[in-house]
Length: 98
Image 1 (cartoon, one colour):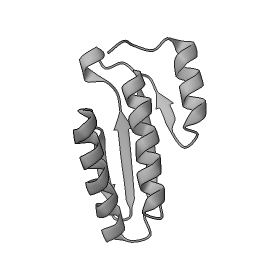
Image 2 (spheres, helix red, strand yellow):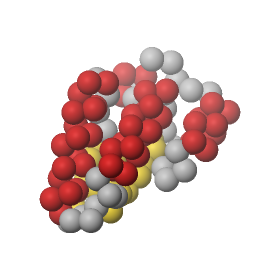
Image 3 (spheres, helix red, strand yellow):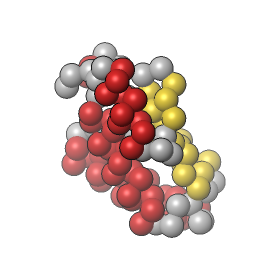
């Protein structure tokens, strides 16, 4: 997987407005309506991540779930896989009311 150039990162980040960039990682925290909804979000995203063979770091704190994405196979760089999964995470979170 090829690293994205800075202009590509800027363009892709503009499309996932709830995500923030720190170095070569993008992150987003979602707030689920309940703790169990947060767990359901994590479960659905785990399935999507497994299908994509691209796995986020996940931190669960009651109803707040934080996702962090970078591509380890590309030397901990941002790639299209990160932004593709970010879009999927956004959709799954919205489906669960987050």
